[in-house]
Image 1 (cartoon, helix red, strand yellow):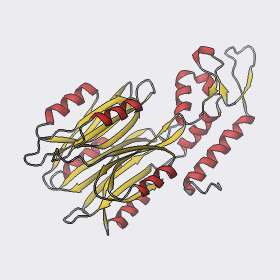
Image 2 (cartoon, rainbow, N blue to C red):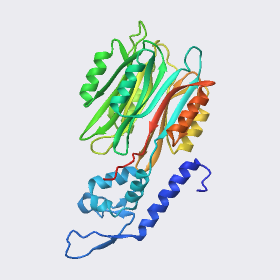
Image 3 (cartoon, rainbow, N blue to C red):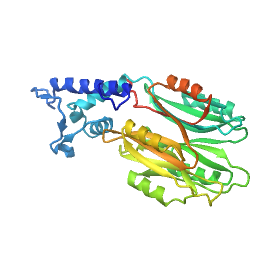
Image 4 (cartoon, one colour):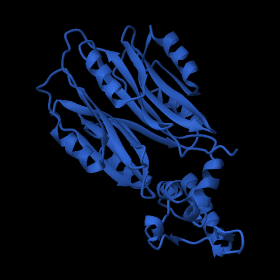
Length: 357
């Protein structure tokens, strides 16, 4: 709780997790497959011993705890962090949210609309109502107490709202992307587990008159592969959306959407940085604000480590960057910031609450 380098809410979160983790060291369970005898085993940090292909290692953090539970429920019942993460997620009622603003340049830029925590049918209905005068630029999805919900951000931009598709295979998504290329550009993508398959949601916008420059998108990449793709794309394209997700086998993967600049001779340098922990990311974002515009932020866990990745576009200046545990508090920040700045992106992220049956 005394760590001066972390936000107070993060300190409380880590402190509570540590307490639960340590308390479970004193508990034991009956882990014998046969009911004839009792096999008392304590909840500990290291598990596996090579049994059943489970390596003997420290299964700490949400990602590793979930992976251990998937591979061997018996080992997971003796792992401290499985209990700690379960209790933490059950107690999580609101999403961890972050928002990025850029400075206004005039017009109706400050006029925006946002919704959060809607079921799909309600979200689509809101999208249809807003379609004439507002352009959807970002969608996020998460599970809240067993129900998948959706959040979105719209900007005032009459006649520019494009398509919105929810597709259940990468092949279908890629086909739709190619079909819409002549008239619309992809601006945002969501990839997530949906039962026994991955689902894909795409947000498109109507192209400017005469704009035929096409961006790119990739999915299913490991981090090193994602960085390699980022280095390969033409310099007149910039990374507009980063998506971290787990595939069907529980492996961390990345997807990205690159948007094309109208002028292919515009090769202002873009940048992509990854940091462990919020403080390191926030410090760098502040240092990198001059001459660079922060376009997107993605937060995820990799082997139990909280990671932040940011994509910057050369030119302009980043304005404000807010992180909150409370979507309602973020809404207040939005209203405050709009007095002098415009919010260009609002991303919702959540350590998924679990539903107890």
